[in-house]
Amino acid sequence: MSTDTPETSTSGPGSRTARDSDDGMLVVDNLRKEFGGLVAVDDLSFTVQEQEILGFIGPNGAGKSTTFDCIMGAHKPTSGTVRYRDEDVTGYPGDAMIKRGMARTFQDFAPLDDRTVVENVALSLMPDRLVSTSGFQQETEEIAAEICRRVGLGNRLRSTPGELPHAGLLRLELARAIATDPDLVLVDEPFAGLSSQEVAEVSELLESLRWRGMTFIVVDHNMRGLLDLIDRAIVIQFGSKIAEGPPETITDDEAVQKAYLGEEM
Image (tube, rainbow, N blue to C red; front, side, top):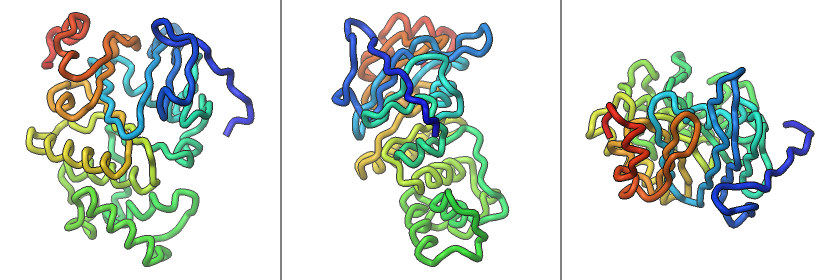
């Protein structure tokens, strides 16, 4: 973790001049990320409340995954702040964020193909130790098996990742994130490649985890299905927020319709 104390931004969207801990468990203020001359995230501000499912929506290339990268420490923001549970964590590395109760799933699944489903999850329960599968304690594997059952993989514990369908790999990705005992999970493109039935099943899974106390930010560029899941949506384009509000108002927003011109909404 960096020993530097990041500056705290006192500016915010609209007429707000400061933020405090009552704004939410995660507070992103004027987040900006530049890659050379390219602005990938453009002074973006938003908050996330406890046990909320927030939809983070935008066309391909809008800056959604880069925002996740900045929150989770994969990229250091050019400017702006990230506060988690009233602590300035701007630029902290991913392992520091995980220890504070945040986790992330990825679009590109990367399980260990030579380990079983339950072994992959058990490894996530012990992120700070290098162990062999023969070194797993029975208690650890029992906890991993329970997490697998929670996400719908109870009948695939001894399968390898290569034996799972795409939807099963997504469930495994969620299980590995849950194994770190997070309060907030950033979920990247969970509906990509899923059928309508599978989208409904994954939505039901996320709802069940929410009622167990978890909070979610769900990124997806396709609003179909996502709007049925989320409590609130933030829509970005070219790294900037163009709309925010409850799902029923988002599709009627003129700026959103223009951003999605030519894509399914």
